[in-house]
Image 1 (tube, rainbow, N blue to C red):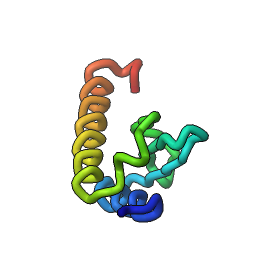
Image 2: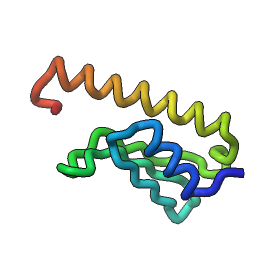
Image 3: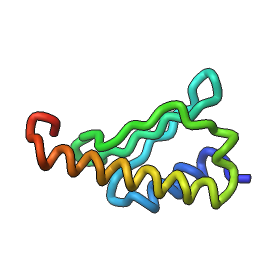
Length: 85
């Protein structure tokens, strides 16, 4: 079983040099924010993740893959439309 501190450490390791903030909401869902530690610029925020579903290394690896996809999609959109950056 993976706890919140371990999850955050895994995400920070996977997305370095970005920083990671993990917040548990009142309904026990997770919000993950990936941002630049120097500037504070936010690259991605994902809310509503089921914390109970992120307790195994395999489920966390799947989350990392999903977040990488979302980051890539965001950067592609931003490079095509400067108003979205």
